[in-house]
Amino acid sequence: MGTRRQSRERALQVLFQWDIHGKAGEWLEDFWTQHPASPEVRSFAERIIDGVMAHRDELDALIGKYAINWKVSRMPVVDRNILRAAVCELLFLPDVPAKVTVNEAIELAKRFADDEAKSFVNGILDKILKEDPRLHDKRAEMTVETAGVKREA
Image (tube, rainbow, N blue to C red; front, top):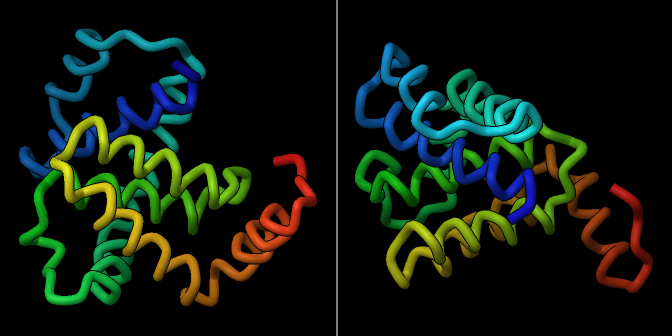
């Protein structure tokens, strides 16, 4: 398993616990003790975790805008945290290609959520990616890749 995939899994696990506990505390250091990770894995996971924690209201508002007939607070905890992490990557981690972010979010949904989650996650991320003006560069990057011209990320 790749370093960034491990990072995303660890980030999802931390965000899940944070969503339940409501704040970071002793459980966070206990988590890293019980789930040791290389410095690279932990560093990227913490970029995602910190981004989601810092921008949660903004992320939830954006997710809620595109999650027709769903309130973010009523979504399954795993689904909403996969979405939060992915939207955080899309908006705040410019070095990560959008295609990678979306594919990894779908993989997390396949692994940690129910059978319908992958379609749900894909649909919302696709709408956000297509419509949010801040993602113009990432949309353009995907268009270039789709045309058969790969750009180094």
